[in-house]
Length: 277
Ligand code: 13P
Image (tube, rainbow, N blue to C red):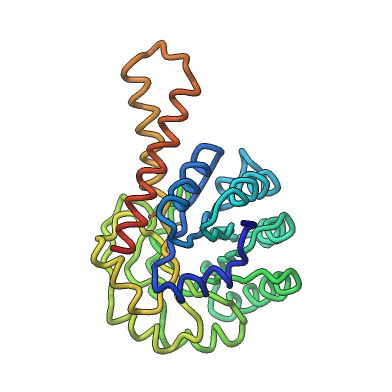
């Protein structure tokens, strides 16, 4: 089927009472691995890419790649922009045909985050593309970007933020961390307070390294999207490293990259099951 609009995907996720994963891609092999896993498990899911990873494929390239593969699938998939910090990246993704986008104004103060997010929402609205925004800052490491600030989401700001920006999904900071260097410590009481205040469904970043019981519990707090990147990236890199360790003269590139794609697929299936068992 064609790529599904992110809002419709969230409807499918809620109707089927499943947890939607959002899996970060970088290149052809990670894209095919993730999409094959989604098709195998039949759970509606997001595939996403951040501007920090767009260099190899480009916005149009990734849309073509994901769209072509999605057309051969029966499981609904949305292509999402992860962490659109710069407006030019956000607009490039919308123009290229992403069906869901994130504007990340978390580095700004409350008022500036609202202004920046609203500008993005107004732009995306004309294209019919839903917007995820972030309130509070998520600690940790994403590629070479390190965020030291651990600024948990303030429940008192949630309703006003969502109403004034018009965002469709809200990414929150409740002890979740990006990357694998730090232990996440999810504050479910805080998540419950945020859920009570939020007019829109919630998103949890930093899905790698969170215990499966905690991932599964999040459905009870109106979380509809959990982002997973590091564990998939590690599986890809480890597969290639293993091939090199086995044979320093290895030149069968297709065999090495097919194994790497299969590792990403296996890990994605594992995570989808963890989110939904
Ligand atoms: P992890 O790398 O911790 O899985 O986080 C991914 C993420 O939140 C992408 O936005």
